[in-house]
Image (cartoon, rainbow, N blue to C red):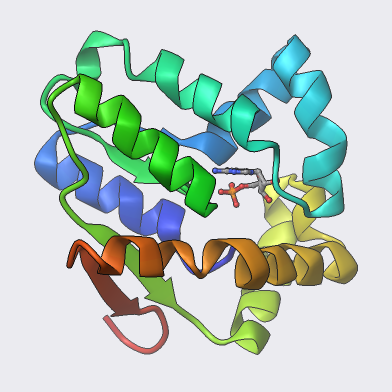
Length: 167
Ligand code: AMP
Protein backbone atom coordinates (compact mmCIF):
# COMPACT_ATOMS: atom_id res chain seq x y z
CA UNK A 1 0.00 0.00 0.00
CA UNK A 2 1.32 3.42 -1.00
CA UNK A 3 4.20 2.05 -3.06
CA UNK A 4 2.76 3.55 -6.26
CA UNK A 5 1.42 0.35 -7.83
CA UNK A 6 -1.77 1.99 -9.09
CA UNK A 7 0.14 4.84 -10.71
CA UNK A 8 2.67 2.56 -12.39
CA UNK A 9 -0.06 0.10 -13.40
CA UNK A 10 -1.84 2.87 -15.32
CA UNK A 11 1.35 3.70 -17.23
CA UNK A 12 2.05 0.08 -18.12
CA UNK A 13 -1.54 -0.55 -19.24
CA UNK A 14 -1.49 2.50 -21.48
CA UNK A 15 1.81 1.49 -23.01
CA UNK A 16 0.73 -2.11 -23.73
CA UNK A 17 -2.94 -1.34 -24.32
CA UNK A 18 -4.19 -3.89 -21.82
CA UNK A 19 -6.79 -3.54 -19.06
CA UNK A 20 -5.80 -2.77 -15.46
CA UNK A 21 -7.52 -5.18 -13.12
CA UNK A 22 -7.34 -3.55 -9.70
CA UNK A 23 -9.09 -5.61 -7.04
CA UNK A 24 -8.95 -2.59 -4.70
CA UNK A 25 -10.78 -0.40 -7.27
CA UNK A 26 -13.32 -3.17 -7.93
CA UNK A 27 -14.01 -3.56 -4.20
CA UNK A 28 -14.40 0.21 -3.75
CA UNK A 29 -16.86 0.23 -6.67
CA UNK A 30 -18.81 -2.62 -5.05
CA UNK A 31 -18.99 -0.63 -1.80
CA UNK A 32 -20.22 2.47 -3.65
CA UNK A 33 -22.86 0.44 -5.44
CA UNK A 34 -23.93 -1.27 -2.20
CA UNK A 35 -23.68 -4.79 -3.63
CA UNK A 36 -23.50 -7.90 -1.43
CA UNK A 37 -19.74 -8.09 -2.07
CA UNK A 38 -19.37 -4.44 -1.08
CA UNK A 39 -21.22 -5.02 2.18
CA UNK A 40 -18.96 -7.97 3.00
CA UNK A 41 -15.75 -6.12 2.10
CA UNK A 42 -16.44 -2.73 3.70
CA UNK A 43 -15.56 -3.34 7.34
CA UNK A 44 -12.49 -5.45 6.47
CA UNK A 45 -11.14 -2.72 4.20
CA UNK A 46 -11.86 -0.01 6.75
CA UNK A 47 -9.86 -1.89 9.36
CA UNK A 48 -6.89 -2.43 7.02
CA UNK A 49 -7.28 -6.20 6.70
CA UNK A 50 -7.42 -8.37 3.59
CA UNK A 51 -10.75 -9.39 2.07
CA UNK A 52 -11.26 -13.19 2.00
CA UNK A 53 -9.56 -15.17 -0.73
CA UNK A 54 -12.85 -16.70 -1.90
CA UNK A 55 -14.44 -13.31 -2.54
CA UNK A 56 -11.38 -11.98 -4.35
CA UNK A 57 -10.93 -15.06 -6.53
CA UNK A 58 -14.62 -14.98 -7.47
CA UNK A 59 -14.28 -11.34 -8.43
CA UNK A 60 -11.23 -11.92 -10.63
CA UNK A 61 -12.72 -15.05 -12.19
CA UNK A 62 -15.76 -13.08 -13.31
CA UNK A 63 -13.65 -10.16 -14.55
CA UNK A 64 -11.53 -12.47 -16.73
CA UNK A 65 -14.57 -13.58 -18.68
CA UNK A 66 -14.83 -10.11 -20.22
CA UNK A 67 -13.52 -9.80 -23.80
CA UNK A 68 -11.04 -6.98 -23.14
CA UNK A 69 -8.74 -9.49 -21.43
CA UNK A 70 -8.05 -11.61 -24.52
CA UNK A 71 -4.68 -9.97 -25.23
CA UNK A 72 -3.56 -10.01 -21.62
CA UNK A 73 -4.05 -7.81 -18.62
CA UNK A 74 -2.27 -6.35 -15.63
CA UNK A 75 -3.35 -7.30 -12.13
CA UNK A 76 -2.94 -4.45 -9.67
CA UNK A 77 -2.95 -5.43 -6.01
CA UNK A 78 -3.66 -9.08 -6.78
CA UNK A 79 -2.69 -11.80 -5.85
CA UNK A 80 -2.09 -10.74 -2.27
CA UNK A 81 -1.85 -14.21 -0.69
CA UNK A 82 -0.28 -17.50 -1.72
CA UNK A 83 -3.78 -19.03 -1.96
CA UNK A 84 -4.80 -16.30 -4.43
CA UNK A 85 -1.66 -16.94 -6.49
CA UNK A 86 -2.37 -20.67 -6.64
CA UNK A 87 -6.02 -20.09 -7.56
CA UNK A 88 -4.98 -17.62 -10.27
CA UNK A 89 -2.56 -20.13 -11.79
CA UNK A 90 -5.34 -22.72 -11.96
CA UNK A 91 -7.72 -20.22 -13.50
CA UNK A 92 -5.20 -19.11 -16.13
CA UNK A 93 -4.28 -22.68 -16.99
CA UNK A 94 -7.88 -23.32 -18.01
CA UNK A 95 -7.52 -20.41 -20.42
CA UNK A 96 -4.14 -21.58 -21.74
CA UNK A 97 -2.52 -18.50 -20.26
CA UNK A 98 0.01 -17.75 -17.53
CA UNK A 99 1.56 -14.92 -15.56
CA UNK A 100 4.43 -13.34 -17.52
CA UNK A 101 6.06 -11.27 -14.82
CA UNK A 102 5.49 -10.39 -11.18
CA UNK A 103 6.52 -6.84 -10.25
CA UNK A 104 7.03 -5.82 -6.63
CA UNK A 105 7.82 -2.24 -5.70
CA UNK A 106 10.09 -1.74 -2.74
CA UNK A 107 9.47 1.20 -0.44
CA UNK A 108 10.39 1.65 3.24
CA UNK A 109 7.61 1.55 5.82
CA UNK A 110 8.12 5.13 6.98
CA UNK A 111 7.92 6.41 3.39
CA UNK A 112 4.71 4.40 2.83
CA UNK A 113 3.08 5.89 5.91
CA UNK A 114 4.11 9.39 4.83
CA UNK A 115 2.75 8.92 1.29
CA UNK A 116 -0.53 7.37 2.44
CA UNK A 117 -1.26 10.07 5.03
CA UNK A 118 -0.53 12.64 2.35
CA UNK A 119 -2.81 10.86 -0.16
CA UNK A 120 -5.49 10.68 2.55
CA UNK A 121 -5.79 14.46 2.40
CA UNK A 122 -7.33 14.22 -1.07
CA UNK A 123 -8.14 10.55 -1.91
CA UNK A 124 -11.42 10.35 -0.04
CA UNK A 125 -10.32 6.90 1.15
CA UNK A 126 -10.99 6.34 4.85
CA UNK A 127 -8.21 3.73 4.95
CA UNK A 128 -5.69 6.46 4.03
CA UNK A 129 -6.52 8.89 6.83
CA UNK A 130 -5.91 6.85 9.97
CA UNK A 131 -2.30 5.94 10.79
CA UNK A 132 -3.38 2.84 12.77
CA UNK A 133 -5.24 1.51 9.71
CA UNK A 134 -2.25 2.31 7.48
CA UNK A 135 0.05 0.38 9.83
CA UNK A 136 -2.40 -2.56 9.81
CA UNK A 137 -2.32 -2.62 6.00
CA UNK A 138 1.48 -2.74 6.10
CA UNK A 139 1.40 -5.50 8.74
CA UNK A 140 -1.00 -7.49 6.51
CA UNK A 141 1.40 -6.97 3.61
CA UNK A 142 4.36 -8.22 5.64
CA UNK A 143 2.57 -11.26 7.03
CA UNK A 144 0.53 -12.39 4.00
CA UNK A 145 1.58 -10.62 0.79
CA UNK A 146 5.37 -10.32 0.81
CA UNK A 147 5.67 -14.12 0.52
CA UNK A 148 3.72 -14.09 -2.76
CA UNK A 149 7.01 -13.03 -4.39
CA UNK A 150 8.55 -16.32 -3.15
CA UNK A 151 5.77 -18.21 -4.90
CA UNK A 152 6.65 -16.60 -8.25
CA UNK A 153 10.41 -16.82 -7.62
CA UNK A 154 10.24 -20.59 -8.08
CA UNK A 155 9.16 -19.86 -11.67
CA UNK A 156 11.72 -17.06 -12.15
CA UNK A 157 9.00 -14.50 -12.70
CA UNK A 158 9.90 -11.88 -10.11
CA UNK A 159 11.29 -8.42 -10.80
CA UNK A 160 11.84 -6.17 -7.78
CA UNK A 161 11.54 -2.46 -8.59
CA UNK A 162 12.91 0.28 -6.32
CA UNK A 163 9.92 2.47 -5.49
CA UNK A 164 11.79 5.46 -4.01
CA UNK A 165 14.04 8.12 -5.44
CA UNK A 166 14.01 9.74 -8.86
CA UNK A 167 12.61 8.10 -12.02
P1 AMP B 1 -5.57 -1.35 -2.71
O1 AMP B 1 -6.40 -0.32 -3.39
O2 AMP B 1 -4.97 -2.33 -3.67
O3 AMP B 1 -4.56 -0.76 -1.78
O4 AMP B 1 -6.58 -2.19 -1.80
C1 AMP B 1 -7.34 -1.58 -0.78
C2 AMP B 1 -7.92 -2.63 0.15
O5 AMP B 1 -8.76 -3.54 -0.58
C3 AMP B 1 -6.89 -3.53 0.83
O6 AMP B 1 -6.38 -2.95 2.01
C4 AMP B 1 -7.72 -4.78 1.11
O7 AMP B 1 -8.57 -4.59 2.23
C5 AMP B 1 -8.61 -4.87 -0.12
N1 AMP B 1 -7.99 -5.67 -1.21
C6 AMP B 1 -7.61 -5.24 -2.43
N2 AMP B 1 -7.09 -6.23 -3.17
C7 AMP B 1 -7.14 -7.33 -2.39
C8 AMP B 1 -6.73 -8.68 -2.57
N3 AMP B 1 -6.16 -9.11 -3.71
N4 AMP B 1 -6.94 -9.55 -1.53
C9 AMP B 1 -7.52 -9.14 -0.38
N5 AMP B 1 -7.90 -7.89 -0.14
C10 AMP B 1 -7.73 -6.97 -1.13
